[in-house]
Image 1: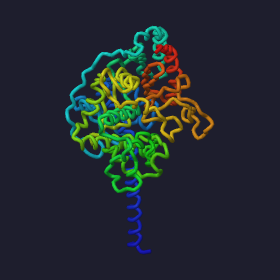
Image 2: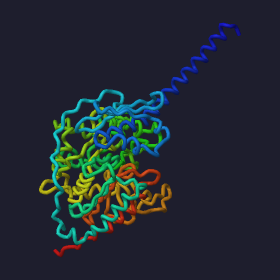
Image 3: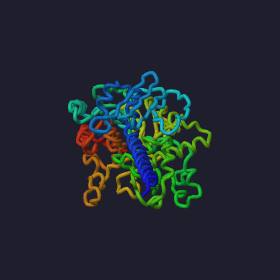
Image 4: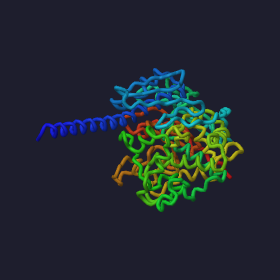
Length: 473
């Protein structure tokens, strides 16, 4: 081998190593961005939207998640109302920006879309329902409820942030951890899915959407398989689309969609069909964001004000002044995960379902919608309705995994007619028609399944209220 050839081989080797290191660096930066984006987004929302102190957020909200996340710093800019998070050497840098009326948005891939100014919703005092309201005090053990709530907050390890019980349309007990109050907006995580179902219901009431129609997703036109997917398939998590809902995988579909993409619904629209629609159930945040994006297109095509629609059709009529739906960089609400509201307004949304989708004299949701969302999706093993979880016997409720013999309710102490909004780390709104009752629990539960950890408290709160006596006809 001559010297010239040797040098050529050496240079090629060095080039390959450099290329490999560059690729590895890009990959590492991408992985780091997932963690940085999560930290920037949560910090931004909790500080600028929820109104908590940065000290409280940065010292408590990211504990016991991942050692790598612990090494990421967060810079909070009060003047610009933004947060920037990054790992060592600036790896994974991510920025979240707060905007009035919209909360916080990650700047992913492109500048944030301009958004119109939203007029605020006028708050209302809690309105008593007429059904059985005269019996509320008689059948509610408020002493027991208050004792349960006080004990729940005395247990700091439980991670409770807000607890509220409403019976017959009246708040009968509530409590908050230090640093939280009845005016603090609280994160939804996946409770946002139930809110998205509610906004869709309002669109159905107005004749803007027919659930049996194929969802008009632009990317699916001419696609033999995906063009058959209906609104109803999306609403029941039975679209048949591929989607990896694995939060532990830093490059999984759900993490890429939430923390890397500017258009969350567009990311989901590009996924391939791996099952016929309606035949396979799979929990998918991508499905929800795709539905939210498609609803935006439909509303805008009819000339409706998309950004004001949820406010005007749902929140304003029920007086839920605190609700904020946070968007992605394209301006579409991230319907799977990012809604903030006070505990009272979370309860108010639950109360809307107890009232059959009407508030006072105004109908908000179609007749029967409250019942329909609690009908099990055909392939869900009785566990899931229309973006609401169901308290019916099933494998997930029994934590049986693939063991089909282990079946139970998520909360065994609650009746089968209960259904609930559910979010990461234990955000819950339980709707219990047989007692005309709503229970709200928000907090941070880590290291154990949140619904199992919360079930004893939820059951005890439920037991402190008697079932209403049927009125003779």
